[in-house]
Image (cartoon, rainbow, N blue to C red):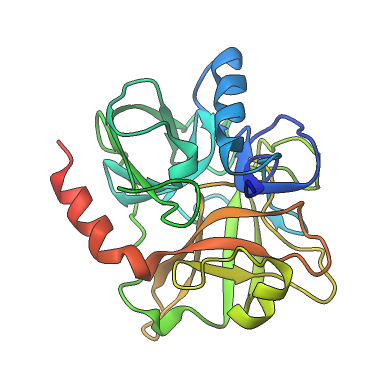
Length: 279
């Protein structure tokens, strides 16, 4: 059974996609930066983990200029965060394997994608999580040809911050089956424990995935086009830390169906090593 990715239908992508289980990488988001035909192809690839993959921020509000400077939109229709100024952390299902790759465009430095201050940088290399097969391990790194001069987002190295309320943001759809957005949206979603989430998704990989959302009422979630984007919160020192990566979920903001995110702390050591090994 394929997981519904939010790549095409959720956050960042602007294209509409079929409803149903979708990965958090929005169809449009996973393809941000590519031309229309390339985006369409990328959207189809992002759906690899489910019949319908797409995601966007549902139930959110527009972010303000200067908010979340580490946010990046990728031309294949996904989102991402600056792990380093020249390295983007995104979802494995947003990319097609590892190796030299100059086909992706990363757009950063803005909330409004049509802002004249937008910075666009081509990719240089992609590293998909070793052993990724569509279940768990949903992370990838994209090495940029040159740095984007914005703040980076530190990742959680343990599970201390894996509970509480989280922030999600992206350019994905604002409703299931909707279009991706020109302006970044943001929302707050609460932690959902594994036992509760397992009732919604029997295929949940508990040690590798986190769930978040208003499970009893729905209404707030990532959506098509949000895949690969970060889920983050403030640590004890009041500094933002990334705890999740938009991965998948059934539909967008449905009652009883929270969003599923890659548990970043589980892969922190692997991500750190992989980033150091990138050319």
